[in-house]
Image (tube, rainbow, N blue to C red; front, side, top):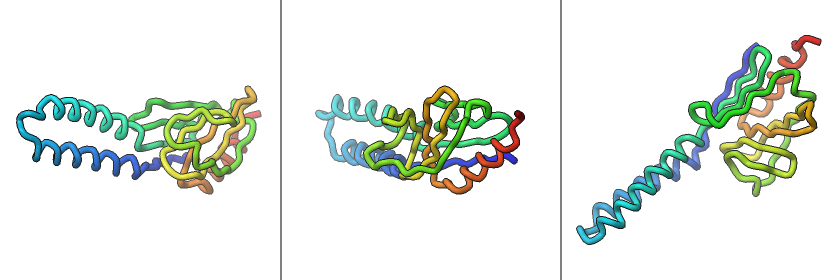
Length: 151
């Protein structure tokens, strides 16, 4: 059984649209005297757009002998072999843990939106949280996946 789910962080996309809109409004109403400020704002907007686009999607794949979690086009990403995962459980993140790649008290977390997550306990003793809006199906996929691993 293969599980693949991509979650989109709509807040990030809202920020993206907002930044483009504000920059366009400033450009429309600014005179020639504001050209330096506009250039700086345009460069900043492009950088923010790239970061927002990159981190607005999180894809989780459970297949074969691994669990793969990655942002945007696949980086940053983490890959866990089945043998590394000792246990897992559904959890609810605290609101102040935020979104993105985060170091949290329990370990590391990848999250694009919401508070639901699945926490992996690794053989090394470390923990890793995967933020998801599909918690039940991810837990079911991990249950099936880890039950089928050799040994």
